Length: 224
Image 1 (cartoon, one colour):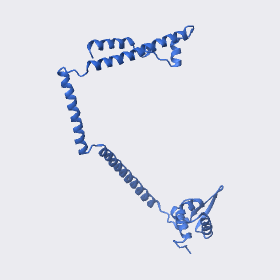
Image 2: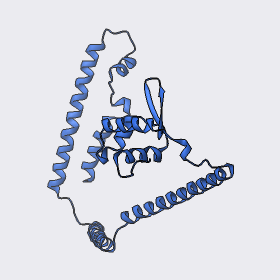
Image 3: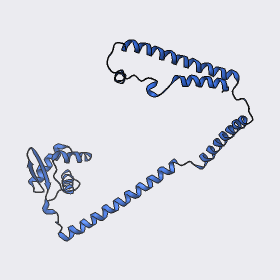
Image 4: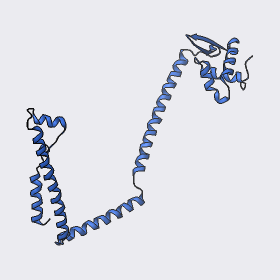
């Protein structure tokens, strides 16, 4: 007599038949934990089902697995298998088409999210218009020969420039003096030594302090 479907035995047997694959006690217990069925009950029911011929057990080393009674299932013939394969291939094609469409829709959604709304466009247009007006005012002032930098401001910038240039010269001099003392008695290739310890000079990066010194003089003469 078959167990009732709503009983513990019926639930376990129904799950095993539905899965129709090798299962052990722990796998069944994990799957049916949501039904409030504990592992000890699963083990007891599976032993009973096996004794009644509803399932069968097989030992694989230390692992014991059960299988549903295969005699209860209809075995499809070659034509049915071929039809099932075609149906499966069609379903796979349908799934691929749906996924492709979903991808297109997601791409369109992302594009729509990155586009500005009408209110945002209006706001951005006003901001840019304001910036253009400000720049046009500055350009017009330059065209009319207006002084945008006062002599005091120019002198302040020149003084800061000269100060930083002086610090550069001082540090450059200190480096050359120290490097000369350290390498005075060395016979190895100094270029290789600098690369090894990670020293990079102005000359290595084609930077000449004289160019900047002349630039400072030029700025002062031209009044920039």
